Length: 351
Ligand SMILES: *Cc1c(COP(=O)(O)O)cnc(C)c1O
Image (cartoon, rainbow, N blue to C red; front, side, top):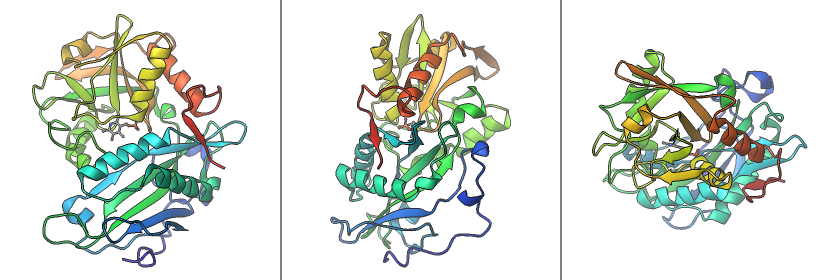
């Protein structure tokens, strides 16, 4: 596949950023002007990357990603600060995480420097699609895939790295808290599986459980560990924390939990604020007796959990002004949006 054959014009009925009302942003598909493409056809070396107008891509029906799920995704945000700068949050963490996933799925991967340079190009090209300060952010989706045709089970002979973007609103605007439903039949991840990487294959297996929970009015599902079914692991696309007697607890990332960049940052911020933080197994029983529960992730930021429901038992938690999660959320957002000086060295300026 050449970089030319990857493209088709995009549909006239897709939302487009030209018609964008920044106040109505949600988390949906709004294609932006450009995407970034880089191809590796020899299993080792990537060609020179380039920007192209956003278009549909063309793949062989035999493509590794379509048949054998050989794909890794990433997700991060570009944020416009009040003084007009555009910044990313810890993008090198996404580069490293993609590399870990790529190793597991035998896809050649870009180096951190190449990944960061590509991000920079993609964001600059779509600069006008980064929402004004306070209105949201430009969600960036790097995708690395086995794009070559393959029939025998194994890695595709060619791989493609793409970056495409979509402006999104602040999750917080959609509702200040979540109501979670405990799923005790279907685990999200299993020991030895791919739960710790952002493999594309991790997401559709939870659709059914999440849809069922949503149909009952819940925001999302809280998954338990596959081995014992006794400990909480995470929500379908965000990590989970609990607060009990002012101690902050979150399960350790030892193979079945996605190591979130937000998770890692919240642990560091909490320690900085002198909270006691423990990464250890969190039994469901502890969740049911916790003072607070909250979730972290690029899309949700830090979002309080208002309730957790197990079967018919619903437990409610502290949220809002007096909550620790609110304190952590404010501090994280202030760094991400450039309201306070970034003493942690977490932000990367895009110029
Ligand atoms: C991406 C993701 C997260 C959150 O990671 P961040 O780097 O904080 O965005 C948590 N859990 C799952 C399953 C994810 O896919």
